[in-house]
Image 1 (cartoon, one colour):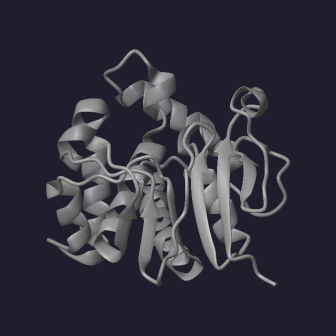
Image 2 (cartoon, rainbow, N blue to C red; image 1 turned 135 degrees about the horizontal axis):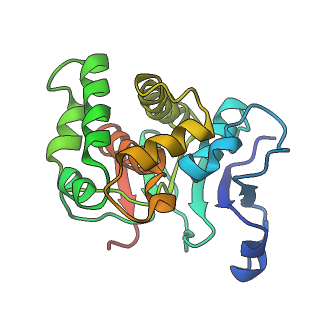
Length: 223
């Protein structure tokens, strides 16, 4: 029988298992994001740049199904879960801040505008997704959410199609060296090892965008 709920918890280093007391349960499955030996289609070689999005990709592409599926981090977990109807989601947090201004204050703003241009090209000018990115004051952070499987498939089709179009636009070719070269060339910051995670930062906003535009959102706690 298909499990009712699996929550995938991403970690990136073996020491984090003991440090954060990570363990699998009937509901929790651990996924090491930079494990290059993982079976099945994956982008784990890009973990440094996509961060926890590699887990979403692996679950999606390898059809590791459960009736409902969730994602969290080694540092951020769901304290409890709620029953969800279709086209509804549980998220870990909701922040009341301007999505575009927050991104521009923290990251390379041109990447943000490139993602909006891709959305406009795919969905037309003034589409709801671009409008969210440019104008919304509600942000769902951390890439932590629980949804029904069918909605997860729709989310991944949306998010990864934009991210891979961004990869194509910048001729990155899913190559780690190209991602690092772009990071060193683009960023106005000293902490390139952090800022090189542009795909993760963009993916976080795109997940927030899709959940906000397509789903009824339930949040137990607000930050």
